[in-house]
Length: 404
Ligand SMILES: CC(C)(COP(=O)(O)OP(=O)(O)OC[C@H]1O[C@@H](n2cnc3c(N)ncnc32)[C@H](O)[C@@H]1OP(=O)(O)O)[C@@H](O)C(=O)NCCC(=O)NCCS
Image (cartoon, rainbow, N blue to C red; front, side, top):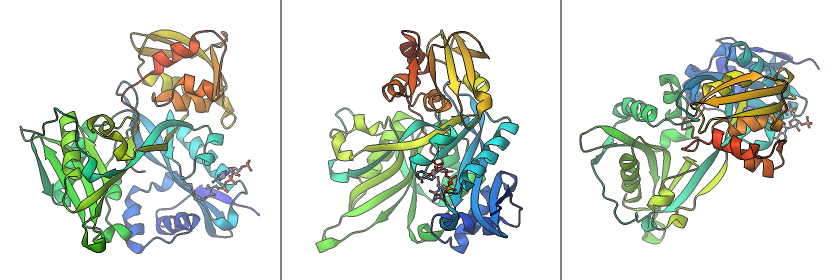
């Protein structure tokens, strides 16, 4: 059977969205399709077609990702990956990933990144686990903060229209490595109250400091529960971001203190969640982590030169990239004054591993030691694991707030 893979046309967007939903054994409601159209870039959105019918989808969205040191670099945000259950395991996704990445390379994007529905899908394509994703189900009543905490400023509940520009500002100010620039189209899509979300009473809370500057926001909804007449509602946080420590602490204090609520749950929290140190009983947060952001280096040299490093030093990596073998080879990274310069070399390798290892360590979210213990890195010269970890270390932990 011949499967054609090609970019979609502008007119095909609704059909393509619905085809992606079919891969998830779901059907998108009309308003959900409508809300997703503005973020679709037809020339970066591919369809696999069998007998005139779309049976597979895969795409990239264009944005810039913040890397350690603060630079924001062009990144292919891979998304809408799906193959119909009728066509699975015939290599269609592999074929689509090939064209999506080939196009990213042609566009000169040194990184590709994604969130995975299942971690097993993407390792073969060279993605490494670059950032963990935290989630929690907090017992509101047990969320006392450590001694010495004093709230400041004030929280305001505002309309969605009022909230959006404030969210943009705080989101950008709070961005850290792994974060991506979120244009209005992606932001509107992230906050589209369509499908099931339409029926939720969304609240938009903004925290302002004593000078009146917005420094944190939370978007959430409350599901009430009156079992046996006891109020035990649940707040589900869609996004909660603070640009300052006080803004962040105060907005969480606000959420934990909402009346009639027993549980506050949040998803896509940073792995270094500050609440673990702000709460007297961190365990009551019931915090857990999973794989989150997966990063693939498209261009090793450009990517390694774009970020900054924790210490100076020299390292030679031997990289193997079975999916894009043009990247195979040895690379010498020399860091001076925190800035890296990278060239291909014939010199002996200090460390060796797949391109996935560089993706995993690139944002500082995984260490070379960790990957060595997982048998993903070979150390050829003594001390190079320590050196690599000192050079690549980056804090805070990577966190991509935007959903793409
Ligand atoms: C995930 C998905 C896109 C894979 O598409 P596909 O066309 O079946 O993938 P391929 O045939 O190219 O598979 C290539 C390899 O990946 C493996 N693979 C694919 N999906 C996998 C999964 N979910 N778990 C483990 N391995 C998987 C295949 O077994 C195959 O391995 P092999 O080469 O060793 O045989 C498809 O199963 C799907 O649409 N799933 C539901 C929606 C979804 O989860 N999308 C991803 C969103 S991030």
